[in-house]
Amino acid sequence: MTQKVRKAVFPVAGLGTRFLPATKSMPKEMLTVVDKPVIQYAVEEALAAGIEEIIFVTGRGKSALENHFDKPYELSDALRKKGKMKELDMVENVLPENVRVYYTRQGAPLGLGHAVLCARGIVGNEPFALLLPDDIIYSNQGTMLKDMVDAYEETGCSQVMVQEVPTDRIKNYGILDPKGAEVKNGRVQAHAFVEKPKPEDAPSNLGVVGRYILSPRIFDFLEEKVVGAGGEIQLTDAMDKLIQEQDFYGFLLDGQRFDCGDKVGFQQANLFYALKDDYIGPRLREFLEQEHIKNELSKTA
Ligand code: UTP
Image (cartoon, rainbow, N blue to C red; front, side):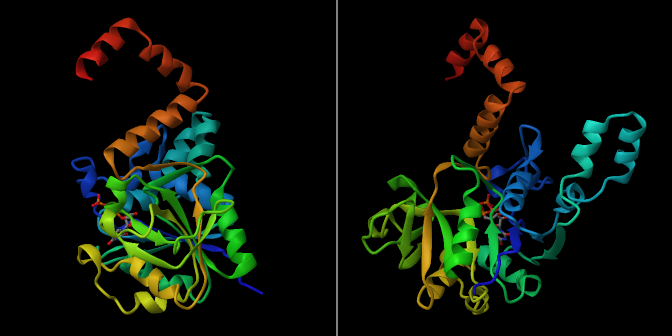
């Protein structure tokens, strides 16, 4: 009988250098996509997958994020007095009452693998979901994370989300090696992982995106603190060791992933969610269809 996946780790200690100057004093996870901070999308996804405990691995300058998930007593009081009950609900109920939140700090940004290792004491000896909140996942089939949790609970095998990436972007990803096997019904067995290979050396075009369900055994490999690509302690390297002991599966993303740590991905996410919004969408389209706006945009294109 495999253990239930009850905990989710959110590493949020990165420096966000791709998003300067916005991230000079503002955590990138707090940048807003339409009307919610980026981090809230991933937290809601985890809750929809049945997660009960949330663990943030934070770093310097991330207090805005901690405040976001806390109760804002003064603001709540002011909203209550003004009778703004809808807004009160928005700020009071960012998290359901039964969900527990933990914070731990990564002293220095030594890499994603190191950030995950910092959560070991809180996760303990049980499987966990890992969500990189930079990635907003819009799934065509509800929540894929829930499917990944179910797959772990049925099989005890670690799971990772992958997407097909264009050749010129392979060098930015951890790549799954399926040993020539095809993706079937959206699943593929992983035989190895390679961090940021050159396109000519890449074993496939299946790039790892920021959703994982991991066996706690991963911590033993992270503990070795091997410095990998980019001088960082890489999660991909530990996954590559885990795979030699336990089966590991890739879940092909059925939907859209927005890399909100990147300026283009962030704007795409804003456009996508704004245009899908019942109130904002029609108004935004109307704005974009005005002749003088079209003229202006054609000049800068
Ligand atoms: P990224 O590499 O996308 O984040 O890491 P970054 O380092 O902030 O990005 P840039 O390149 O400087 O813009 C993926 C995730 O891992 C976390 C990040 O916060 C992000 O959620 N991370 C990364 C850590 O928590 N600690 C680290 O040492 C590195």
